[in-house]
Structure formats: structure tokens, C-alpha cells
Length: 285
Length: 285
Image (cartoon, rainbow over the protein chains, first blue to last red):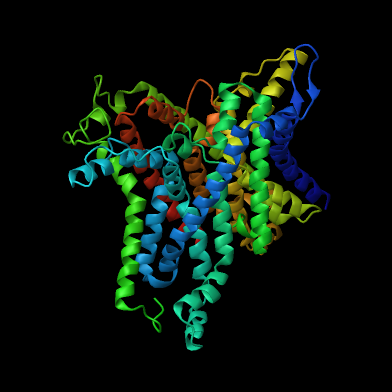
């Protein structure tokens, strides 16, 4: 038995060191830095200054709210577009084309997000393909700039998140017994009712886990807003980056980091509460 | 399709049209990137100047191809080493976690299991920033207290490896744990009964069982490391991995050499993805 205890501690120690040194300690450290006021004359002292600054400067909290709102909107649109696709893959397609479709969905996501954003940039910019095509067929008489709008950011986010929505949806719809749907029809339901009362509730775990993952990816995205958004379309992760790397104001940057973490945890918690799911059933699969 | 309740022919056609449009949306940006890597022009844009390999093999300015672009090549080498480091560390931690969480029952297991998954719900930018803050403070503290200067605690490739491994190891752990849970422990007990010691039983029975899964988890972590951007951006020093170099080029104003790199990445990822699928099939048998 003692040998087993020894083995247990032999495994537990590296685990605790890993999580402690790379996750827990850095985050507490960041919290501590965000609550510190540096002063050359009086030394460091405890202060809520940086959090107060966040609420005083409308630019900061406006960007914060804007980021949250756009991340939620993009998640919702992703769900709207993905659900019919997932239903098609799970229930309509024949086994062979099912696999092919799923592979097509997977394909872009083996690639760097940078390459995907770059593809959209080539398509959408002023000298880009779509603008050129529109001119060629006579729908436009001057180059159109389609990049650098808020709508482009949403487009980019929806594109990036698609796979993480489709896969959980397919896996929850796949496990659904077709006889549920048949029974619904036998009892006189139409497609609309059956969708809302049978299919959608059944897919709920997939919906929640897809939405949570996509939302978190959107909120923490840096590349898409940076490359596809315009000069004044700020994103909160860009502000964190600016404070740390450009301004070298680590205290304010840390406060922003903590605030972003609070926002994502809060919204994820809210989504789990509202849908009655737990974290391990959604993320841990 | 559910045979007893077919769609009307017209509805099914509309549905298929929708799926077709979705696939177009999914693949269009990638196709564009590939096509324009062969355009004999200084810009990845219309008009089409004719087919050319110059962005791959061109050896003179201004159309310097990928093979002669030393900065790009160096960053590929950097990315390769980082990905190797991340893969080794993540697999090691994943094996430890799998043994710890499947073999042992202990107090607080649920809490620790949640802690293990925690990095998956923290935005990548925040993970990077928190590690940056903590390691810099540690480096400063060490230098002040005992005069040690540890350059690897400053932003650079070593820190990038740890930053990426902090969440990639969590993903690998989940993959390995899922596989190890389905392992029949009596096989290991039989080895022990036949006189093997713990290590021999582990390395001749358990490890071969886990090997296909370990290889596919290794491929996943290699690819995720290679294409990671958010965490890397915060921790990078003077040597930059590929995604950072590509990003800097994009900001400077892009030339089709970025397309050429992207195409190479696509070929490389697709190859690894196929290998991955092969091993995943092995792991399910």
C-alpha cells in the first residue's frame, strides 16, 4: 500500500507544480499587479486606481461592452447558420456524403487563423476579388472597400467559430433517435412544432457547449478584429495588448486582463445557469 | 434522411442549395489564397498576371520566393522547435494526468480535475499576459535578491513553449484520459500476477494500448502549437515563430509570398491531419 501512496505523490507533484506555476500563480500575480500603484517617491501601494480609471474613461468601458456585445451577436449568428448544416449532416445526408461534409467543415480549421483571415482580406479589400467581380459585371462602377467595417469583424468571427459550433451540434443530433421525430409527425405535428418541441430541446447540450466555446473564442480573438476591423473598431484584447506591449503600463493592462476574465467567466456561468448544464459536460468532452 | 418523412422535392432542393452555399463560404477564402500564390504580380490581388512559381522559387528582389526568404525560413525553423517542445511537454503532462485521474481515488479529485481543464476557458491573450507578468516579476526578483539573471524567463521562445503548453497539455490530457478510461485494468493485473513489476507492466501492457492515442494527441498539439497566435504574441522575444512573422508581414503590406507560405502550411497540415485520422481509427478499434 505504501508503494501506492508513493506512486500517487510521484504523479500528483508534477501536476500541482504545472497547474500552480503556469496557471494559478500567474493569475494571482496579475491580480496583485492590477491592484498596485507604482510611485517613484513613495514606493508601491495598494490601490483600486486602475479599475477606477477603467470606469472613468468611456473609451475603455465602451470598448468592453462593444466587445461583449459583438462576441454574443457573432455567436448567435454562428448558431443560426450552423444548425441547419448540422441537422443536414446528422439526419439528412447519406453516410458517405456525411463524412465528406464533416471533413469539409474540419478542413479550414487545421489551418492557422491567420491564413483564414488573410483569405478574407484578399476577397474583401478595395482591390479585392469581390469588388473586382462586381465591377466586371457592372454592378459597381468604382472599387468598393468591404474590409474594415464592424460587419467584416462579425463575418470573420462567424467563419472562425463555425467548426466549434457544427461538431457539438452534430454529435448531439446524431444520438437522437429518429422515432422521436416520427412520433411527433404521427401525433399530428408540423415541421415547425417538431423542430421547437423535439429537435431543438434534444440538441440543447450541443447548443450550449457550442455557444460557450464559440463565445469564448470570439471574446479572446485578437487577429480578426485587428486585421479585418478598421482603425476605430477597437476590441478589448487589443487594449490589453496595447497597455502591455506598446504603452508598457502593466498595471492597467493587468486590470484589463482581469476584467476580461471576469466578463468571460460571468457570461459562461450565466449561460450554464440558464440552460441547466455543467462545465464538465460542455467543455470537457 | 428519415425514410418515413421525406422532404418535398422543392424543399430538399432548397436545403441542398443552402448546404452548397455554406460549403462555398467555407472554402472560398482558402481557394483564393492558393490561387493567388501563383499570380505573377507584386500584390495578391486582381488583375491576373499569369501563372508563375516565382513566389515559391524566385531568387531575386522584388519577387523573392519563399525558398530564398531567409527571415521567413528562420521563423519556420523557430516554429518547428517550439512545436516539438510543446508536443513533448504536453504529452508528458497528459500521461501524468491520465495516470493520476484514472488510477487513483483521492480527496479533492473533482476540484483538481476542474483545475486541469481551467486553461481551456481562459482566453489565450490572458494566459500569455499572466505568464509574462509572473515570469518577469520572478526574473526581476531573482536578479535583485541573489543576482541571478535567467534570460529564459524574459520574453522569448522558451516562454512561448511554456505558454502554449499550458493549455495544449490540457487538451492532450482530455484525449488521453478518455482513452485510458476504456482500458481493461485486468490486463495490467494479469501482467503483475505473471511476475512483472509495476514499471514493466506499465511499459509492456498499458503504454502500447495508449500509443495510437498518444501519437494522435501529439499531432494535435504539434499543429495547435504551429498555428497558435494569441498566447505567442504576448510572450515572443526577438526570434519570432512563423505566425508572428506572417502577421508582421501582413501589417507591412502583403506580397504573395504569404500566400506561398500558407499553401505550404495547408499541405503540411493536411498531411498531418490524414496521419491523425489514421491513428484515431486505430485508437477506436
